[in-house]
Image 1 (spheres, rainbow, N blue to C red):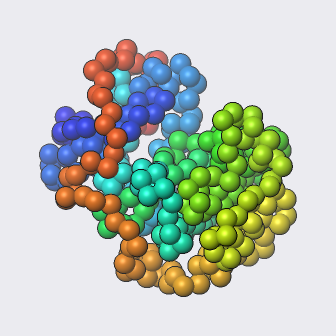
Image 2 (spheres, rainbow, N blue to C red):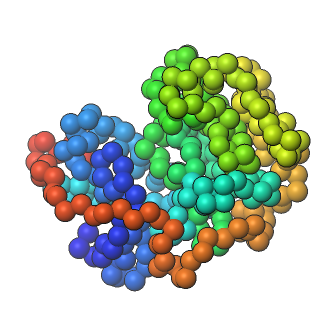
Length: 313
């Protein structure tokens, strides 16, 4: 890690933070996620973190943040990722209040493509929210944060409760076991939130949100495009035997939906479609779209030798 010149913090998580860093050997910019070993061990999250690293190594797709490497020292484990400097989709959505139909479609398509790619490798993401989509300087977006991601073999389910309250799928709340369809539910929530400016199920209290999710009543404003509405309804379907993404045509029901018919997928994946929005950035070094987070100076206790469960880092 001595080869990385860390500048500022881009985000903070449960076990550590992501820092904007320059690699001295190639002078390129990277995002370095570093997590405190002793916290991970104390909170029994070793498998989770090992998983995140293993899953990210399998993914190479234009709309997912790519991992370049990983390493560790006595105090931290590190994941080195490509740096996406335009800030979180969340920030841009809050500034704009809501996105146009064209913008919403553009970012929904990239997220749908990312899910289809991950699901092809039996990986479910399980934590979609506007904070976990990062904006590139060219106006395209990338899915990030595979901290809750998991490999689910076909026909199996998982039971961990995870996700952001407004984005949790009914089958997760009911502890019925869940799989790939949870990601498609969250895509429905994201599309609605981009078009309307807030998620479909809102309440001051998480319990109120959960009750609304289970009740399943969604209000669509008049300006909501009819094809977008048709897709959101098919995604926000509690009945898994009817939810898009989980039927015999899989992700094709979504990617080939009428709402996306104006998009050329090959051109989109080739980054050939002009973005309907671009973050304001002076150059690739400009990280002013990220919130200012004070840097932490305290060092966690060292974890070495027989205590260190991160042998393959």
